[in-house]
Image (cartoon, rainbow, N blue to C red):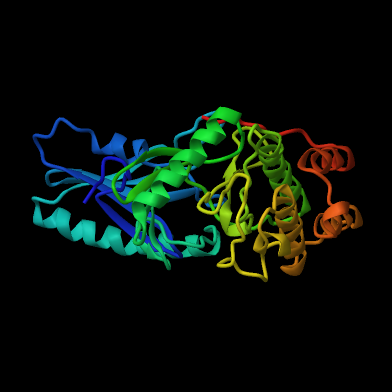
Length: 339
């Protein structure tokens, strides 16, 4: 069933957690435009794949299409009609069946170039305390335990982010008794090289700079790669990265978060009264994990990562770490205002 807040196609076929074939179906007397709905509902997150497939119908008239990666300054992909079949006619149904077989031969090679998603599109993913659904345009989280309390907490967090004008974060679109809807939709992937890592670090540190200097300051406390998403910038070789998942965010006075994983969180987060140092440690851990997973890192960025994970006294502030990155790698800020 299509949801008004979490948009989904009428039909979707998943390959490697990516919806590579989607369809919109309307009765012959409908005033809606299923061809337009194919892209109105879709935020493109399939790079480096140049296209995915789809179809739309008016009654028995079915058109197979290619949905092409947005070009130039366009934000939406382009729909290219390939062939139309009138399924009222027996010969057209036979031809359509042959076309489906041929289409399958084109879909399979896409598997080699589709992004590696941590969670599937369009399908609910069960986690310990919530269900996460990745729609075409947004993310829906449904809480199974203490929903009202958690939603109220997130509303306060996003209001604080809005007040402080924190950039490079996701946005709360709306909520119900047990669910929240969040945007943008992106890819939970690791940077592929040091350049992408620097882009991600700049975006994250810009967010932390505003957060930690706020009145009052706010701390994310759960900075890990699953909580950072990537979106491609149009007309740019750099990537756009967002800090997401604010369930653990807190203000002073902070309380020890004993439920977090000690292997991927700062030691101080397990003590009362921690602050910005836990987020800085988390950014250092992002650098460390990229190196562990085969990304070739320069001595400069490795040294910065070690400083961030060092003693509390030696850790730089978000502003200091950001200035180091901008100076060492001659990159630009990637700020996008909080929406």
